[in-house]
Image (cartoon, rainbow, N blue to C red; front, side):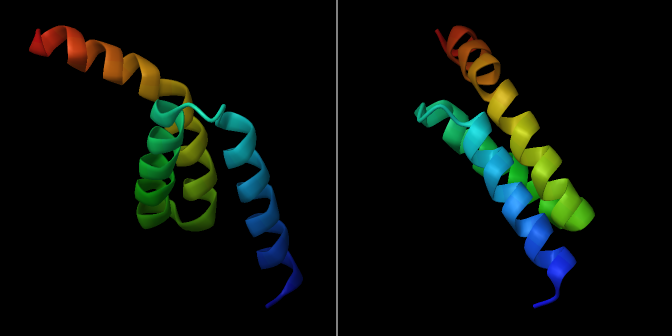
Length: 69
């Protein structure tokens, strides 16, 4: 494995763990965001998608629960 790929993987993991506060919603949002970001834009998309998913997941879950009541 080349050095830039290792660096990108390490930074991705660090950002994903920093964005998650062990709250199930944030972990799930980070996982979904990272997966969809990786499909669209590769490793950079995984990092951005994971961070965006972790930040937006609680708001999405709250809105979804409010809409289904």
